[in-house]
Image 1: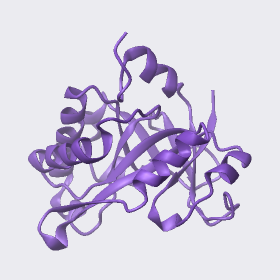
Image 2 (image 1 turned 30 degrees about the vertical axis):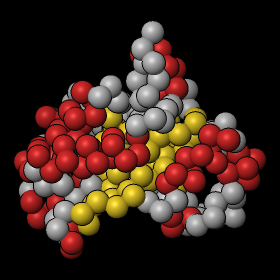
Image 3 (image 1 turned 90 degrees about the horizontal axis):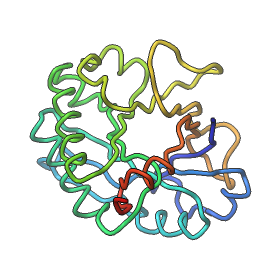
Length: 214
């Protein structure tokens, strides 16, 4: 199977979800927030997260969410996940995965593969304890060169690869195939994605991401 979706944040501004649905969008990965290391290890909710979540749901567009991480240790990964859970996930349902976005060149790349991988595992384990389905977002280059991929085999992947053909050499459930500068959605530049798993069925049948256990 292949489903078409997008990922959005406050950068897309007042985004028309009704128009997005007309443009064949079936799911959206919505940024929940990000970590800012310039101010300690502060965490900020995306100013349009709540509205994007609500309006996507109103249009019957399935949603997942992602957190832009700057964690460089297992403990920091758990701290990010805890903030995300308490401020963005509780009381909501998500048909698509909860992603940790790993691409920070300032702090994470300098921290090295082991510490980045530790942070990812810390993030994932915290949310799995809360019954959430975690996916790792990164570029193909980051997966192969900036993390210990063998330690992350148990986790689903969302790979960014802005080329014409699907990436190879990695098992993944989602592919971000466009950087947003071509073929705007609802008149706005945004990244575009394909999903290859029936995530909605997984979440609902397994009782994950806020859905009740059966």
